[in-house]
Image (cartoon, rainbow, N blue to C red):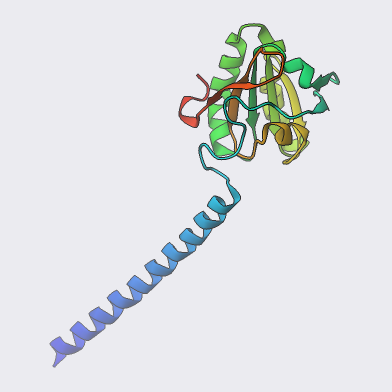
Length: 176
């Protein structure tokens, strides 16, 4: 009889543990579903595709200089990063090195930091010496023009006179 009681208690405890673990998995799946439905963190989703034309925009960089679509008439490397993105923070030193090595210097590199200005200051300080930097809120003029919703998003814009995307950098190759 004591053996039977011990077995029933053990099975009950295992069932309770299974229930707790299952609830944890369900909670994580709901979090992932929310992220996937918002498009966050999905490589390849959002952003312009190769051959598409960049939408119109007119903004002012952190140095107070205007930046518009006409500035993309030569090969320009464009990077969208966010201070709230762990991958962006991790890749920032590589991005800065890549921007420093880009032909044409900082005039051919446009870095868009998406987020609150106070949060973006560390990114701006790193990127300003090697790129023209614009800070904007999510859904700002540059984000709309490039349809950038995920971070990091990096691409090259062509020198075809119409500002077409010629190459989209995948997360695995950011920065090249």
